[in-house]
Length: 78
Picture 1: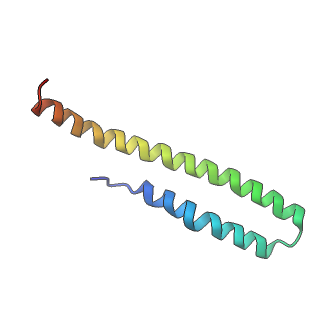
Picture 2: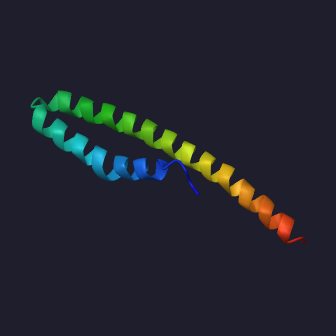
């Protein structure tokens, strides 16, 4: 049904990439000021990615959902 799995990448972003980014930055960067700046930067980039993926997922659902709605209205006249 859904040929593009944006939902998978949303789940990966939230449960894998974001925590991994936080752990790696915490381990690698020793200076507290630079670490805080990278956390802010990563949060902004993560929000942008999340927003783009959610937007793309909703567009895919609208496209695939429209065909189902048209079929439903064609077979069930009201």
